[in-house]
Image (cartoon, rainbow, N blue to C red):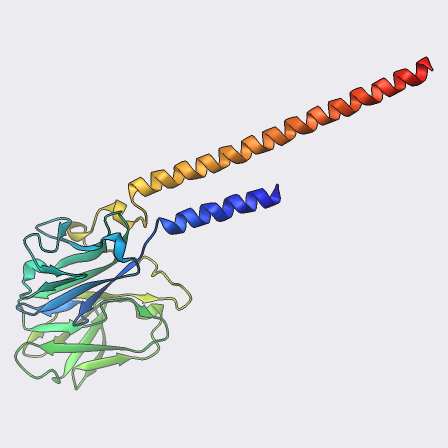
Length: 271
């Protein structure tokens, strides 16, 4: 029975792994903030080309719209936006036709004159991270002040700041300011544990108006989830049936042995 249970468990794990495909959304140039008019390319780097990945987004005006449907140009597995508008600000993610989604990235487009170039993807704990405070029309080596969660971190004379060996305490909402030019929007920097393969959820999710639906956070589509639950139920029922059959057979065998023993005793008495 132990071998049967182990086989059932292995089959179940195989079914679960077969129903989940992964994709990774990358942004080029790699930044979470952009000036109005910038060019941006977003790519769905996939491990299963048959999954039919596409790019979707939530903005303050539209929900779950697809690249090529009124915005962006879809080609292969990439979406190009030739002119970033402040209305393009929002949450972007890759989604397959079966339902699973990739990591989500929050992009901010500003009509102002200062942006903070920070990692758009989660940063591994222990790595070095460089933040760059840029202006749209002047060189990006002007003195800048960097802030995290509203508090000043430090002032840098060259406009960029490197955080060495980042830890979870460096995670937070960051922005920068260049005197005489203005302040950048804020962007969340996520730091992940080097021992985890999937970034843990942050304590500050994207704004409600731009967050994808709650069901998108599940790695399986609703159909796949129902199918998986059905398979689990079927496997459990099968195991119970096998146990019941074995129990009945054992009881029959014991009854047969008892009847045979009773007959032998009767023969001995008669003898």
